[in-house]
Length: 115
Image (cartoon, rainbow, N blue to C red; front, side, top):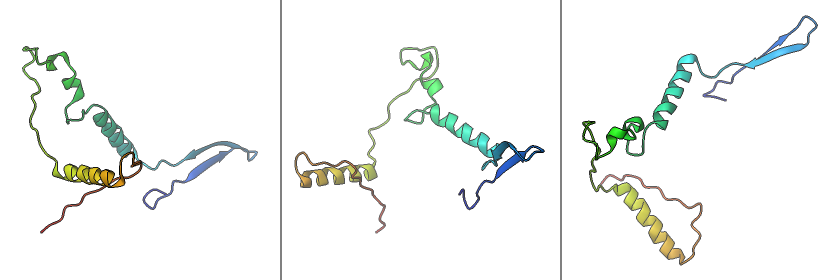
């Protein structure tokens, strides 16, 4: 079921009553399908730093190429305090379990607490 909507299956029969074709009603309209395809293209072409990969992988992105008019420069370091808190909790738990402890499947989450 898709958000309370279940697609219908349609059947076509010939004059003798034999099934000649069937099809399922699409859950998405043309605009929704176009949007999901566009999102996938953007995800595929965006790097881990939010950079546009066709630009970041072009010859002009080489820091030694002074003809392109752009380059990538580092900014940081930055600390993601939520991620640090989560990783610190993992480390603490691993130490409490002892050397060789199996942490497979364990994960920690963090939440913002107002004070």
